[in-house]
Length: 307
Image (cartoon, helix red, strand yellow):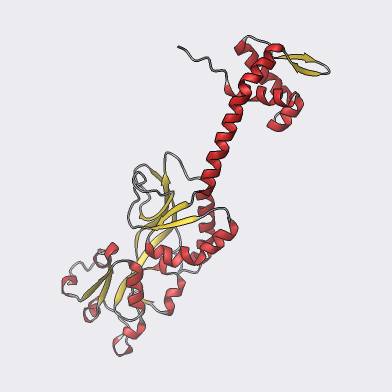
């Protein structure tokens, strides 16, 4: 059996005009011209092959067929409106799920989330910590902040900032107060690594042209995440490969960079599903996040804040 479905926009215009009893009032409600309302209703009448309104100078009045048609379609619009309200209310109360590396959460998000809440009191943010590419099929995530090239299948992304990294340590670690100036001088120190960033030291040494450096002979301590490794370095436990933008300009208070030779390890990117795009809440969050990051990145050494 074939479905006889009229064009929906003309149907909507008809329902509004019949409900308020005026093309002019319907035009105001729909933010269109009265002539546009008249054209849409004429389109519906042509489809139905039925005259729905008597047109006259004193106004437009429903015909008997028009009144009967309005009585039939009006409940459907009430059902649609009610269902739409329920969905939007449920969506409005659902939290915005943001997945971030633990270090990014501690350094950037958690200290500033109260400001986002003040700007958007109706939006609750749920922070989920995770490292590596997000799996939108298995994970209930709206926005993911992750490190890489920005090219992940099934996603769209926007670069937040470049991820530059280099060795850092607390200056009290220097032997006899002398800074570490040569890569080979690292042999006398303990190296720190994060479980999520195990290749940091090897990547940096390769970029420095020293793949021969004997990492296997070094004393190393591994931590579950970068934030713990950074804290251990700040406490003088050893030397760590630090992500300069993530640590921010404040790192100089407890950590000093060594060798002045940072390497780039991809970028921090905001990622969302390509098929749906970012939701309204997600767009608000990203706009707020950019405004929070801008003054921090502006205080970094020249050339390290660019995407």
